[in-house]
Image: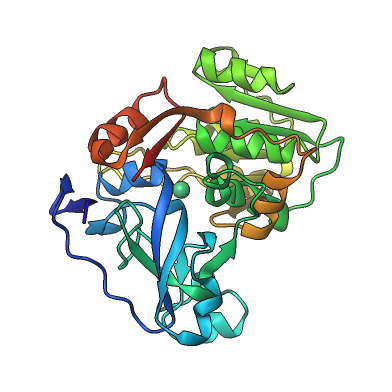
Length: 326
Ligand SMILES: [Zn+2]
C-alpha cells in the first residue's frame, strides 16, 4: 500500500509499504480524507524521535475489526482519538488514559499513523461521524478538539481579554473557540492573509509588528509554534493571569534560555494543553448554527501520492490547512 514515512531522518513516499496487521481490539480503517498538521512537520525535524508512517488527522471508513463483537463498526464513517493506552496504569486509574504510561500515539509515538491507504486504531478510540457532516469538516475534529481542550481547563468569561499568539491553523481554531466565550478575543500574527481571514469571522487582529505587550490580558494562548511565543506571552499576561501553551516544537540546540522569573513575580498560571474532547468538536462542527468555520482554513487538497509535496507546502507561511486524499 501507499504510505508516507519518516524513517532515519528521511521523509519518503513508500508505494510498497507492508499492509498493517490488525491487533486485538483494533479496527482497520481506510482513510477518505487526511489533514497535515504542524506536528507532522515538527516530527520531521526530530520531535519525539519518531520513525514510521506519519499522520494523525483523518476521516475514514472501517473496513475490518479484530473482534467480532465490534462488527457494528464495519463500513461506518469515523474519526478517532489518537492516544492509545496499551495497558492500565496509575494514570488510566486517574481517568486520564490519554496520558497512560504505556500509550502509543497515532503517527506520533510508537504507532504508525494514518497517511496511508490503510491503518489501524483501537475501536475504543473511534467516534461515528454523522451523515450530515462532510469529510471536509470532519477532518478538522482532532485539531478543533485540541482547541476545545482549553475550555476544559479554564473558565473564560465574556469580559475576559484573550490574546491568541499565532495566526496559523491551530491559532485560528483556538481563536474561534475562545470567541464563543469571550467578547474580547484578538489574534496576533505575522500574516496579512490569515489575519484578514480572522477579521472576516468578526475577530479583532493585530499584526505582530504593531503588538506591544501591555501585561493586560487575562488569558494568552501561545499557538506560535515558535520559541519566541512564550516570552511574548509572559509580557502580555496580566498579574495572576493565565498562559495556555499549545505549541509543541522540536527543541533546537541554539534555543534561547527561558527566564521563568516573570511567572513568579506576576503569579502567572501556565497551562499545557494538548488533545481535547472529540465529541464536543464533532458536535460543534455538525451544529447548523455553529460560528466555527473550518473549511475557510483549507488551502489545498492533494492526492496522498503527493504527500511529500503537501508537507513542504504546509510549511509555507502562505498556507493554512493542507488536506490529503488517499
Ligand atoms: Zn494535529
